[in-house]
Length: 358
Ligand code: RAM
Image 1 (cartoon, protein in one colour):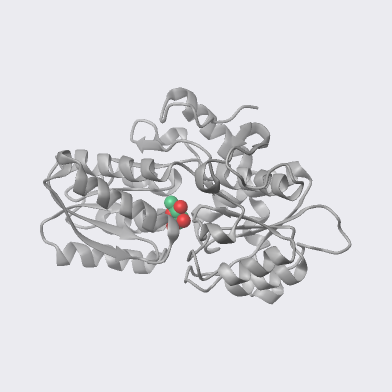
Image 2 (tube, helix red, strand yellow; image 1 turned 30 degrees about the vertical axis):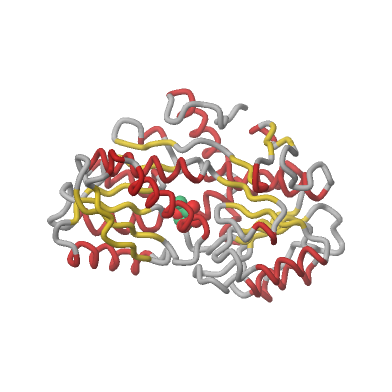
């Protein structure tokens, strides 16, 4: 079985087929992903079980009740199964800065071999992760990085700047190159969101092509559906000339699309960002959304599991140039800053959205 390779051109027919295959296979591993999640730190079980000497890999996403997280974890579970490790998921129900600390502490007490974390805040998790490392755990950041001092590698879905550029290109095209736009993000502390936003701002400020585009507001829906919906509504009423919204979060873009779809602004205010095809399909079909982007989230979890194994068995230390095998996705290399890039972004629109199922 072959999967999407990072070198394949984004959105090519070839990569489309492979993206579908990976998501579909990973989904068969997803059944337990939400079921075994612990809401209370002390409740988590499984990882670091003294009676079981298989590699324990504990996934700690930004938050559990996020459909994006479920897809990422389906890949994490598949990778862990292939490795013969013990898979566990723990995490908070909301993505606030300090919400992950108690979960890390519990995993440390349990002796988890590998903690795979998407950080809600790059520094708030630092001391707890340091303790975990002192106890022998390897730390793999994924989706949203920690401060690099606190992890061994960061598995990044795509090159961060590319994520920003694709969204700027899409919004510029859809608003005809000029007018007011706003950003509706997740939480204010999220490393991934802030990195993408700063690249978006930099591109808008430095590329003469975008001189007539005016970023008038940045708001935060906290990856909470209801809050994101309200923030979208608030933007539209606060900025009567608003021509477009960029929402680089799957929760934010889906909530914004839902709001716009039943409003008088449907088809008038452009909406781009990062969304799950299954959540966005109806809004592409009803004309609310023309085009948005994402990658294959399952691959992120899959590569993270293999990176955890490579760190634990000493194949890699996280140094630049280290390489490891990531199952069906082949060899991966650690780049500058201890970052492993998984694959290219893909653009979704009415022509291809039915080819995807995640
Ligand atoms: C949301 C989260 C996640 C981000 C995706 C695109 O689900 O904010 O961290 O990577 O969107």
